[in-house]
Image (cartoon, rainbow, N blue to C red; front, side, top):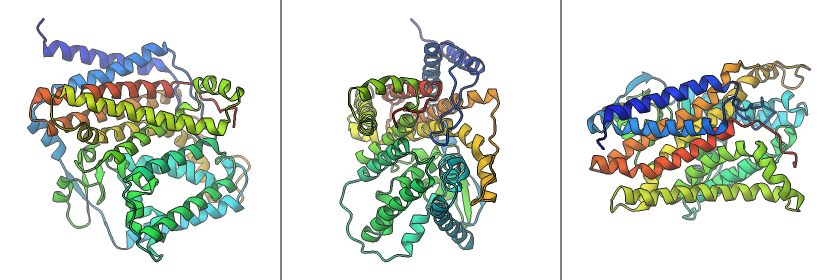
Length: 474
C-alpha cells in the first residue's frame, strides 16, 4: 500500500472540520471555577464517547499535520522570529509594582479578618480566587510573566536579614510537594466561604515562605522551593512576551535596554535548560495533574467513587490526599513510561531521563490550556462582583452583579483544552527535531509522547464536559 501525503492531509483536515462541527453541537459547557460557586457545567448534547474520541483524534491529526513540517530551516525561522517593544524593565515603575504587591498582601489579610463574612461580599476572597488565581494567572501564560516583580513575599524577603544556610540538594521535590499540598488545602477547606480562614492560611504560607527565605536566602528559596514562584515561572514561558526570566538565547540577542521581546506562543518552552532534572519533570507533571484533580473532584464520577468509600469508614480528609497523591503518581508513571518507549521508537542511545526532561516543557502548555478552560468563565462571571466590592470593601452592597455568559461560551473551555494540546504537540515536534539528526527518527520519537497527550486530552475534555457538583462529604 502506497502512503500518499496528500490523502493523509485531506483526512487530517476532515478530522479538524469534524471537531469544529462538534464545537457547534456541544451547546453550553462551562468550566469549573473551584471556588465561590462558579457557574455549573452542562453535559454535551452529543454522545460523550463520540466527543472524546473526536477530540483525541483531532490531537492525533494535528501531530500528523506537524509531521509534514520536516524542514529544519522552516522550524528555526518560525521559532527565531522576534519583534521588540519599548518597556521600562527597571527603575520606578518596577518599584511601584512591588509596593502594590506588598500592599495588596496586607490588604487581603486585613479585609479577610475585618470584612464581611460572606465569600461573595469579601474582597479578600474575591481578590485571591477571582483576581489573582483566575485572572492574573491567565495573564502570565497569555501575555507574559510578571510574578518575579509583583511577588510580595519576595519583596518583603529582600528587606529581611538572611542566614544564607545551604539548601539541601533535593531538587524541585519540595516545590512539587508544596504545590500538591496547596491544591489539597484549596479543595478540602472552605476558603471561599470563610474569609478569616483564608487570611489565616495566607499568614501561615507567609510565615513558612519568609522563614525559609531568611534561613536559606531569598534567591535559593524562591528559585528552588517556593511552589507558587515555580508555577508562574513555567507559565511565563508559554506567553508570547519574554521577560528577563523567561527569555531564550534568541530573545536576549534581540533585546535592548528597556525593551520586551515578542515571539510566538510557547516558544519559551523550547529552552533546553527549562527542565533540568527528574525533580523538575515531576513538578511539571504535578502542575498538569493539579488542574485535572481540581476539576475531577467536582464531577458526578468522583461522587460515585468517593461516597461508598466514605460510607465504609474511610475518612474523607484522608481520601482526598490519597487520590491527589495516587493520581500524581499515576500521571508521572505514565509519562516516564512514555519517555522510555520514546527511546525505543526513536532508536537512540540517548537516556530516557534526557528525553523525559526535554519533552516535559510541552506539558506546561497543556496545563495552561486546561487552566484557561477551568477558570475563564469563572473569572468573567465574577469580575463584576470584584469591581463592585473593590469600591467599598468593608461595606459592600447587599446585592452584587454576576455576569451571565452566553450559551456559545460553552465551546470556549473545550477550545482552550485543545489549543493547549495543539501547542504542546508543535513544541514537542520542534524539540524532537532539535534532539535527533534524522527526520524519521525525530518523528518516531514522538509517538509515545503523543499517545500520552491524547490520553490527557480525552481526560481533560471529559472533565470539562461533566456537570459540576459540590462534594457532599466536606
